[in-house]
Length: 365
Image (tube, rainbow, N blue to C red; front, side):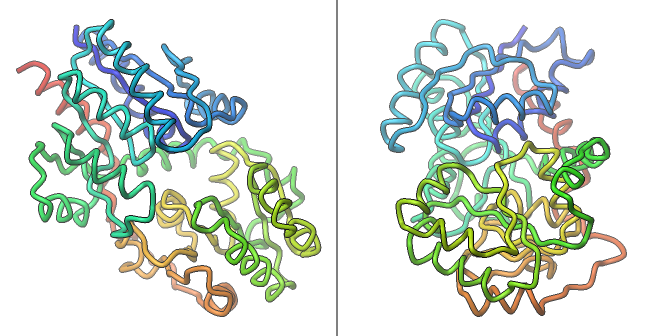
């Protein structure tokens, strides 16, 4: 029996892990693979971490490294130290990493240095902005991975242009099957009732990137809210962002925007329900851009670039940066027409099958 380790540590990793774990543990593969889950603890909010594991029926991680919050270098160094010990003591055959977090890069580097093959799910994404921490993680992980699963044609082209040496498999994006499953589960979500909301009466807003959490950007966000004072905004805001706003003497200004409903971060199913029922979403999240496309919710991205260029080309996503006038205009006046049929830019929902079948082949060789 081959031992496969999944290294995860943050919300995007947990979500991508779920279909892979489910398939590896199905009757078809249960006697072929032992799947070990290592949670680095990068997502150190225990409550939120547990919500995601529960919502996706994931078992408790086999190991939790509890690295917690720190600078990126210290966080990655702690992961490397602890992962190396686990990899050597468990005689691992292959390490799976997901996306572009610090846990992704640490898992890939530690495995490579331990002479273990690395498989990277969601490889080849590029924003071409090296100031994004995620961009550096993506590039480095791709160049040391043995097997790469790019989600789009653009991602494949990016890998080819960089002369990546690992074996590439056109797998599509695992989010297609995740969203399909989520749409069946969000019927049980009571988030709209709890917040006294009706579908298509509000705009969803999310903000988390470090480049957008400075005084100028946060002041611009408040100015955007003021410009659309007659529109209802739902803003799941993390306590860390609240603390930062308080430090910058901006939180009271935000509270004066009475059209903005500030709520604590929610679980994945509640978030997908909010996203699906919103008029539009305004976000700096890469994952939310993709989810919005799959849910046919118009997306305004408050960044100057995106790794999900297909959503722009399809006319369902628009880049405004944190520009007050551009973002306000997009919220008020940009109204893309919903297509009768959606172009399957992220594949047909067979990604987990393609990946696990490929792993079976390479591990049997």
